[in-house]
Length: 392
Image 1: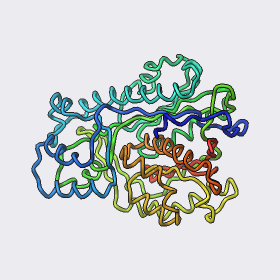
Image 2: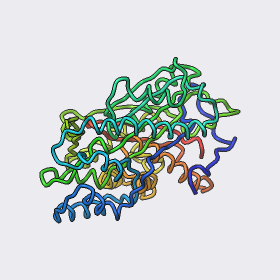
Image 3: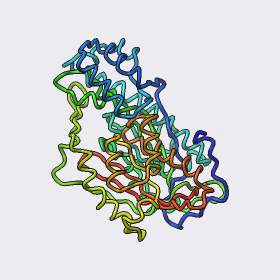
Image 4: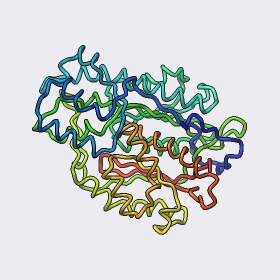
């Protein structure tokens, strides 16, 4: 059963007056779907590399990531047009941005249109736009091109969040929540869009960490419609957003290190990242759960919508918090089906969360009304939102 088959009926729980709610979700993807078992041969063939040690390393990484499929913008047609993308040391940032700027706009339009169609109100009712991406750089920004592509009103208020990485989707949701709650009657479109072409490189023994990205990251777009005081005739709220907080860990700015160079973006993920998240997750979740009177004894009584940065992060979080295996099913499904699609992935997780909730709705002991939406990004930055599932 796909998320498109889930219909939220008129018995949806009522939202708290004045509180922001997620009213619809949408997603969009490039046309090329890559099966993980075919990725290694294709990547080494397209980059003209025959290093057996690097190939074996990537094979191992592809198995450990638990990713099964991913959508990607990169294609043989693009490499035929821009063969320099697969050549070590060539200055290609101009070519990459030409490809990325167009691709992220198109995917963001697709995801937003899907979201608006599920929402059920006309595009002219959108008052604000929050646009998130770590895959483009231009002036004016992608928010203008998305607004134009959707036909948004010229007076639509726009906010851009650039280079927030994997925490960008939840950061954007936090900003959209604040806008919705402080502008009565507003309807905020949050759109995220990412592509790995900005950092695509041939394999190199001097950059073994690049292979982690090759094995893990995917492309796509996500969208949410956020507003308070839903119209009971047209709108069906999915989640109520109760409290949002952000926290950065001092002296960890080099743990997730990204730099825009003449060869595109270069990323380095420190091996200590999963341990750093594990060491700090309890305090962070405690601050969120305190706002609704819950404690660490209640971890298995709430739902968990966690950005799947990778299986190591999910495994450590599950172990540290002593979560039941089913608590991270939505995150693991999103990782398997889409890879780590950076800021977009939380949208995919929340769609799967709705599917899982649908399965549990009639179970007598199901009490996952409250839950946490979490993501981790550069900084190291923790983003978290306490939410209530209104579809239960």
